[in-house]
Image (tube, rainbow, N blue to C red; front, side, top):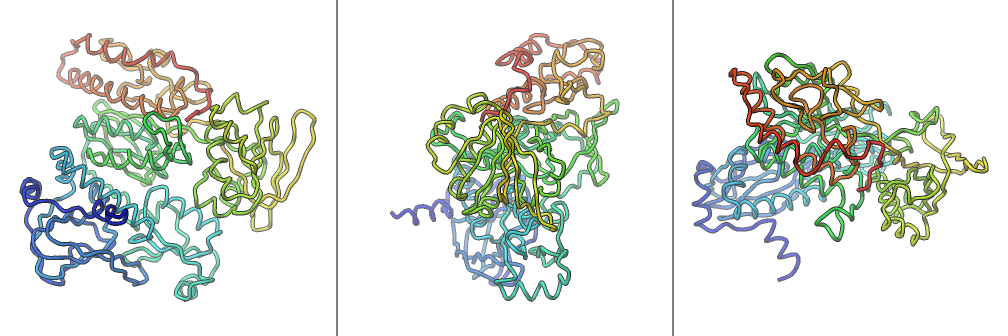
Length: 591
C-alpha cells in the first residue's frame, strides 16, 4: 500500500456494521433525500454523521464562490471535522448524492463516545485531526483575506488564524483579478485593507481579531446563569493541562485566552528536550494536541476572549469580559503566563508588526527570506527561533546581553547554533535605536557593544525579540490576589496569610492557591515557578488535584460541616514536590 493510500484510509476509515451498532446509543437516525445538504460551509454543524446507507459528496467552497470536490463517502464512513467536538461552524459543503440514512451524533455525545468507546474513538479522533490539517493546508472553509502578503495587518490576521489552527486563504489584489475587483468595490481607501471575506458572505474591512472571530463564530458564549466548576484564564501549556485534567475528572471547565492557544510555547519552532518526543516537536503541534484533547473531555475554550477583572461574592467567583459579560465559576485558575519583554527603545511601538516580531512562524519567516535579520535573546526560545529562521534568512545576528549563551540556553542548542554558518552570536550587545520610513516600516537597526562602546548600524528590516518574561497579571489589579515585587502571583505559604479568607481556619493554604480562596495560579505567571513547558504542564496536574480539595472544602462550608479529612489535604499539599521551594521566577525559560 502506498503512503498516499494509507493516509487516505486514516483520514476516511470505514466502521464495520457492528461498530456502527455500538455507536447508535450516542445518536439518532436522520434521513436526507438526494441533493439535500448535510453540512454547509460557515453554518454551525449539528455533529458527526455516520453514513449507514447512500453516498455523500464533500467539497470545499470559498466565500468567492469557488468550489472544489474533496471526496465522496459511503456506508461505514463518517462526516465530521475536529470542530464538531465543540460545535464550531462547518468548513466544507456536504450533499447527499442519493437518498441517505445517517446516524447523527451531536457534539456532547461525540465527546462521550471518545471516552466510552476508546478504540473506535481513537480512530475517529485521528481522522478528524488529519482532516483539519488537510483543510489548513488547502485553506478550505475559512475566510479569504485580500491584501498584500507583506502588509502588517495581513500578517496580523494570518498569524491569528494560523495560531488557532483555523483554515484561511490569502489573495493578493496585485496578482488576482477577482481580488482586485473586490478591492475596487469594497475598499476604495488603502486603510480599508485587508478585506476579510467570511464563509457566510460577511465582508470586514481591516478587522481586529475579535471582530473577525465573532464573524466566524469562533467563540460563542451563551452561558445564562451557569456556574462552571473551573474557569481557567490562559490557554498556554499550564492552562491547557488544567483543562485536560479537570475536564477528564468530570468537572465543567471553561478556558479563556486573548489571542491563541499555546502561549509562548506555541512560538517554539522545535522543542527537543520535552519528555517523550526524541525527534522533537513544534510548540504549535504540542499545544495543538492539548487543545483538541481538552475539547475531547468537554472543556470549552474561548478564543479570543479577554478577561479584564476578577471578583468574588459569598458563593462564587466572577470573571468580567471586555464585552461586559460576567462568567461565574466555583474556582478560578490564573494561567496567563508571561510575555516577552519589549526592547528599551523609544520608538519601538512604531515598528511592532512592521518589522519587530515576537513570534517566528512561517508567516514571519517568509517576509525575511534572503535578508539579513537581527534576533534578540539568549534563551532556548531565541535559540529555537534562530535555528528555524536560518533556512529563510540570508544572515542572522543574535544579540545577547550576557557574556555567553551558556548562561541561559541548553547545551544541545548552543552546539547546533555553532554549527550553522549563517548565524553570528554577538555577546554583551544590545539594540539602541530603530529607524524606519514615514509609513513606520523598519529599515535600519543600530546596536552597541557594551564592553567597548562601539556602535554598529545596518540596513535591517526584521528584528525578532525573545527576551526575558513579564507576567500577564494587569487584570488582577485590585482583585485581592497578592503579587510579588515583579508582579508574579504568590501562592501557597508565600501568599500573605492575612489576605486569605479561609474556612474558619479549617485548612492551611494549598501549594498553588493564591491569597484569595478558590483562586489558583499555575505555570509561568506563578512566583517561584520554573520557566519550562514541562513544569507548566506538571503544575496543571497539581492544580487539578487541588481543585477537588477546594471544591469539597467549599461544599462542606456551605453545608456547615467544616470538619475535613486532613489526610486528603496533606496528601495534596505534598504532591510530587514542595512547589513553594521551586527556583524564583527570575529563571529564564528553557524548553
